[in-house]
Image (cartoon, rainbow, N blue to C red; front, side, top):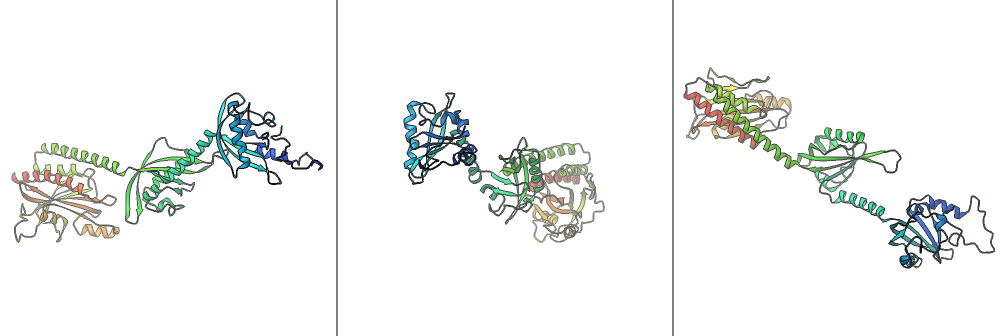
Length: 469
């Protein structure tokens, strides 16, 4: 059965004119085929309100076939309730006299007696003389339309107003869409990051991110968010951030088989909370190390051995090497005017180049050849902590920088802290970090001062007992 009947909407031939051949070339048959192939529900009415067209999507939604619908005078008594028929017909047919399209929402009846809320778009159909000849109406279930509108609204909100980053990455792992939040997090404009490799945006962590994106493309979304530490390149320098990231694989909804379009990457900056947790965990660990060191040192019969015990416990997770230098004359009076230049004697050190416990040294009592302004000397003179770093220089310059200060060749960062006990300056302890480690921070200096207080007590006790070291 055709989706339409021969009517004045499609035929404007006069009564004396011959009709064209209907086999294979009838315009109404072509129109019916086109209407049946569309995804939207379509129907049409002539100027008297009689149904002239009814396509398959309309049949799917309401259950009425074209044979049952075409030729009926409006929707009254079958597609709408009798009480609503007059109002529905008036709203639909009013499109004949109105410019453009009219949008309405009302309930239609299905063939099995159910009710479906639909949204309609109606417009006038005009004949060759330009006068209204009927109305066509496209309609769809409202919940489907609302779902579509919600999807569009959600997409726009994610890309404009979301308080977390949203990046759409194509199959080549290059950004194709970036929302405002993500652009700020990446330190660039929304359009300037499009199509660029992620390695140009991130200094560190790009391998982990690309690995995650590749996995999602191949296997689908992971079951839980992942936390990625990255360093972002910005005009002000690199910024280390922790992003809690979720991933979804994007596939074309139009293909029969899933065709990957890329990955949707959503992330939220949790750097402050994670940094706070790490700092709290680090403080707990360091407090435990100080407690363990005090218990182990209490069991040492030789106070000099207690000095190295404190040093060994302090190194765990804190530094690569450590040195203890004692003032050559026993104590230093740094407050006296014209005080002589401080001379320091090495009394303990960790082995350089190989792991192992700290060892006592300095039986000869010869001063270490520290140059003027050496960080260890400064810490004694200032009675505080001094931090030093080779900076961003080449490996050879960093090596020369370390050796000139009498430190192991692989040293890049140093922290020197004064040793004081009972109001007297006894020397300095130096902690060293190699390449690949971060520079010492203020919180590190506070921990080093706690360690130095325990070492100074043991060192002072060793001197009171007449220990040679």
